[in-house]
Image 1 (cartoon, rainbow, N blue to C red):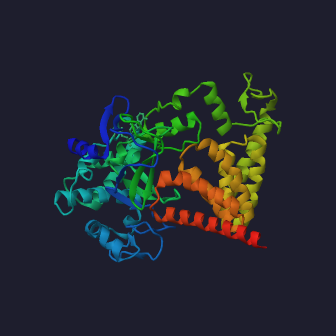
Image 2: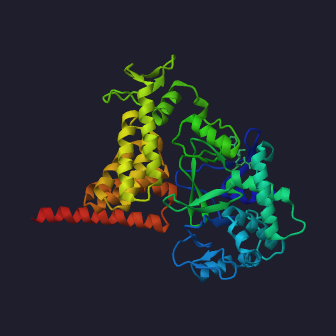
Image 3: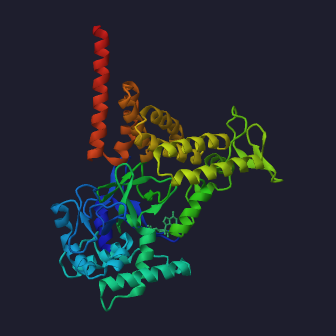
Length: 479
Ligand SMILES: C[S@@+](CC[C@H](N)C(=O)[O-])C[C@H]1O[C@@H](n2cnc3c(N)ncnc32)[C@H](O)[C@@H]1O
């Protein structure tokens, strides 16, 4: 770790260990919003390929794919990606090609990532690929595994997966226990690689980025530029303070966040937000996010369960809402949701989701995250159906909820402004489009930087919208 410490120092970073969190990354100087704190290429990564969707192993693109003719497992978009991956894939390819057809089907992305991990170690041990302070297997060995906290069922699953990996690798002295432990390390250290719009593409192991601990009120954000993981400050991070990112969806009640963190990362969060658990402000926030609304449409109160359990009482106006009434609506919503999620027809799905939204508006608070998720689904389908006007109406409804639950420089808020701006631009609402694009740029230049093709496109759209507004103004003045 000394080598890593030495390589982090010139970047203004230092490693430290806390008794309750283990290793942590600290700022050795002040960092300001938008500044890159650290970036790293993956030690290993794989696209999330499935039977229905394939991506290139090099760049994760979906176009012009050709299957490797030898192993019939891996896809490439062209020779440059194939060359980039060749040293490692040459070894992997020989192993995969030996498997029978049925066995090949069981090579999931996670199994492949483990196979690649061992092959990369082999290549580094043999000096075929270079070893650096930020790119070596010792960093993988140092990752937390939580093996002693995992239940037996999970351990059994890891053991079965490890057996398959060992069968593929055919290395006589490979340790099944070590492979199983590495699967456990993947579970709490690997990152989902997303595109600029935060759509998942694959999974990668970034052993230095993995040192960054979680906070439900993080001061940094992790964004991917292709496969490169980039951590940027979203707040001022004073010297000597800890760098933190969020591992989970932050727009969730404290109980939900803590449950997810405990289940996946096996720790109890004690960040400033979590420490408020049980306090009035936290109860209010949770009830708004995941609970019910007052039955008086003019009241913005939230409900809490009555002590005699007969119903819910509005904390603002005192009106009581019957438990049975809520239960009935909730069961209707569930029936519609089951139908909607299995519907393969967009027209049918849109009708179902509109009915779900209508019912949810009756029971959930206007700032409910449950209602928000339905609107996001509606928006997605309306865009696919090219119903731009309706899509814009729904998109605008989501903005106040995003502003409330993704405050400050949050990429999701920036992206939602961007979606709104694109719809406004398309519908000729140029002045509104300029406002939305400007808000998107203000946030996304901090979270995403300004040099990626995605950001260049956004900046260009803003310039175009401004030019059009000027043109419209001068045409009006002329006439
Ligand atoms: C990706 S690792 C982070 C680095 C880790 N601290 C280490 O020593 O390698 C995730 C693990 O770190 C610990 N961790 C992360 N954030 C934490 C937090 N806010 N409080 C307590 N433990 C935390 C948990 O054990 C979690 O499973």
